[in-house]
Amino acid sequence: MSAAVKNTVLFALVGGLILLTGFMQSWNSALLILNMGLISAIMAIGVNLQWGFAGLFNVGVMGFVALGGLAVVLVSADPVGEAWAAGGTRVLLGLLLGAATVVAAVLVNTRMPRGRARAIATLAILIGGFFVYRGVFDPGVEAVEKVNPAGTGFLGGLGLPVLLAWPAGGLLAAGAAWLIGKTALGLRSDYLAIATLGIAEIIIAVMKNEDWLARGVKNVVGLSRPVPYEIDLQNDPGFVDSAIGLGFDPVTASTLYVKVGYSALFLVVLVILLWMAQMALKSPWGRMMRAIRDSEVAAEAMGKDVTRRHLQVFVLGSAICGIAGAMMTTLDGQLTPGTYQPLRFTFLIWVMVIVGGSGNNFGAVLGGFLIWLLWVQVEPIGQFLMDVITSGMAEDSALRSHLLGSAAHMRLLTMGLLLLLVLRFSPRGLIPEK
Image 1 (tube, one colour):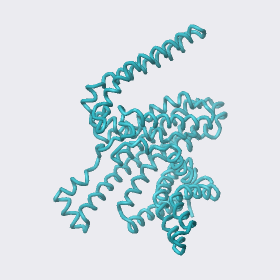
Image 2 (tube, one colour; image 1 turned 30 degrees about the vertical axis):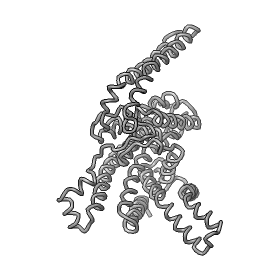
Image 3 (cartoon, one colour; image 1 turned 90 degrees about the vertical axis):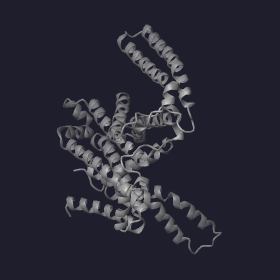
Image 4 (cartoon, one colour; image 1 turned 180 degrees about the horizontal axis):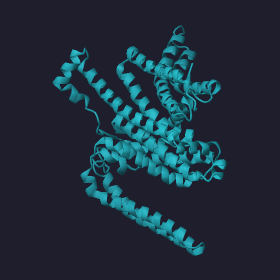
């Protein structure tokens, strides 16, 4: 079997499983799996750029995904006028003072000659700037968060169309990646992993605790959508007549219509990013990145700036993860910082890349669809198997209670087992790098 036929069969198999979900369960479930599979595939492409192209071990994926979700609030949420009037100006001024303090300290540290005078000047700027920053920033935050804390309590966003938040999410994640990469990319791979994981935790902790920014753990709900609302479709006589004519209940038809609309938008983004990643892979830049990945010493000997190229691909991969995070928040219609769990979902994205085929963009896409499908379906399948296995046991059996209670862990067990099987029988992934 040729590689092209094999790859086609693998994609057809995953597509068939999604269709089977629609026939056996519901089309709403199938479309939900499809939409999250599209988003997961985009995240996997971003991680594949970093690991498959350049060998960068980034374990802070969820931090960049969270920044993409934050961008949706900052761009598409309506501004809260009362909060801006109460302390919005002080908050912005405080942030500017904090940034100016950091810039001033860096300039002093780089331009003054080494010695006690430089150390004292840098320390004085940092300490004095910190107190000035907090003196302006804290009262503004307190005033903002007191404005209807049950419903708003934050500054809101720009009120722009939500589709603009997707590239904005990529830019926000790219900016954070540049700042992180300037300091962390000089580290060894294991230290880079620790640094990116820690920074991701810091990003998520800030989002959880700074209510003025995006309401923290109170969540921002009711975000705008790029597709119609179901209730609007159900109140449209033309849509209702069309749904009934096709044999659908109008309520079910409206939910399917909305999910199909999301699928079309997500598919367009995936195709564009996949095409760009393929063009990059086949370009001289892509060949250079793989050469750096295989041997940094040899690449440096040929005159390549390894650290600079690592920074480029780190920023690009993080930007793609930020776009995916903005898409996921748009699909949910709300920002819930508590759901961003770096160890859990970062692991899942890495499984997608490794199982699909590290270094192969199509493999990353396949892994995104396959792993998300299994992630959703394994738990109900496991519950069904446990029900069958324990059907002959007594109701008060301790073993029966233990087995039924363990069904919830089938997801992680299956992911680990699948990863081991792929690494044993196809160590380069289902669609390996050429």
